Image 1 (cartoon, rainbow, N blue to C red):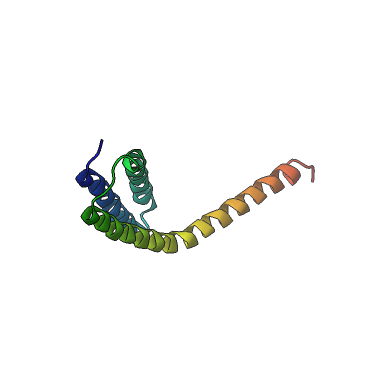
Image 2: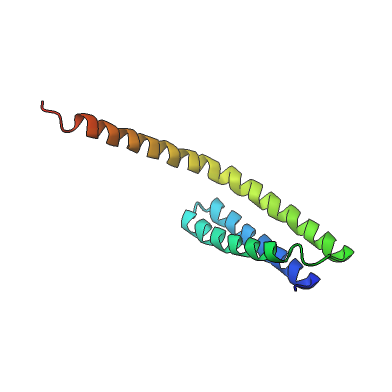
Amino acid sequence: MKDNKDIVALYEEVAQITSKMLHAAHRHDWDRLTELEAGCANCIERLKGCAAEETLSAEARQQKIALLKIILANDRQIRQLTEPWMQRVSELLGTTSLECKLARTYGNSPQ
C-alpha cells in the first residue's frame, strides 16, 4: 500500500516527464518524445495501481491538484506542437498509400 508521499512522488515524476516531453517537442526531437512517452505511460500505470488504495490528506490532495494542472498544461502544449507534425505524417502516409495503390494498379500494365 502506498502512502501519501509515494503517490505525490509519482505525480511529481509524471510532471517532470511531461516537462521533458514538452522540451523534446519544442526541439522536434520526436524519438526522445516517444521514449519519454513510454516512461510516462509506465508511471501512469503505477498510479492506476495505487490511486484507489489510499485516501490522500488535504495537503497531499492540494499537491496532487497542482501537479495535475502542470501535467495537463504540458500535455496541452505538447499536443499543440505535435498535431501539425502528426497531420503532415498522416498526409505523407496517405500520399504514399495512394502511390502504392496506383503503382499496383497501373505499374504492371503493358505500355
